[in-house]
Image (cartoon, rainbow over all chains, first blue to last red; front, side, top):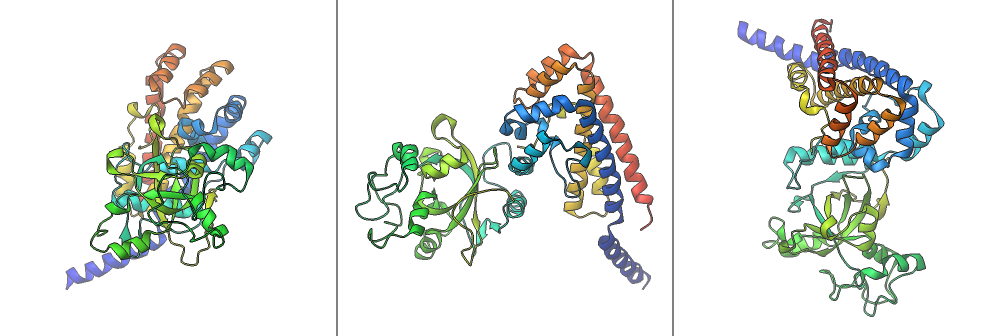
Length: 308
Length: 111
């Protein structure tokens, strides 16, 4: 009886404590105050050189290096403190949001490009959902890809409707100049044409081809056993692709299946996707994160997105 | 790609994580406190280093500090600041002691 009473007291006490979290509040307040003081000291003493650094050093490098710690925001902190707002800093604050994403992801991602563990996956989807403003998930309708972190390679443009060639492919001259050299894939995508004819070709179809990725659908579990179901699920499925090294993100559809395993690459991106992510093929190829977007109402537009 | 600063190999941070791990904190709260502690440490170490450098050397250090080549940072620092490793260790130790004291106080704080 005494044991039960003690147990009940323990459970009740723990629950109450858990709700109140006095330790957390105490330490958060104390360490936040300490942080403000340290930050203030640092910026007051070395304002000139720090402003110089943020103004002159490449953003990407700052985000990847030890200086990123100076602009990291923790949930209860505001940076910079009012007394430290200067024109240089204000400019910096206006344009920099992806560095926070870069830093947050760097804390979770493994050193090597490998399949993520469940806990890594959970933390990363939490970060991405929070920073991008929509639900990002590794599993949708009980289906998953073989991986969500892999090396991306460059794909070519895809024929969008019968008769589509490089001569008809671009609506805007600037885009033609920029992306013409990527050429068009000799075959059709895994799903065929994006539209059955030029007359039926829509703006939405155009965006799907422009912002497409190729993923290894054939390596997902149960793909062969439930081929039709999986094929239909993957076809034009909306995904977010993120370069964890610069925080650039883009919403794309699964427009093709591939690349083959022997290539050593795990997914491919259209020329426009690669350009936005600042990813290259060949010796300079690098990793990206790619997750499903839970977008039942189709409200998330295709194309580049910024951290909120 | 666990984020490492150029000084990470000479300081110890696990004791703070362990001390926080013994407290009644959610995963997110613990992570938040660890990130606060690490950020405090980072600011303190950068302040200590920059305080020992001339204005020109500060810029050079800041240019080096994001370099993936950490040997380059250390080569620069060792050339400019005597016993730099010991100094960083001391800053880190002192701050860790303070933070551990705070944790002790937090345990005694009324609910």
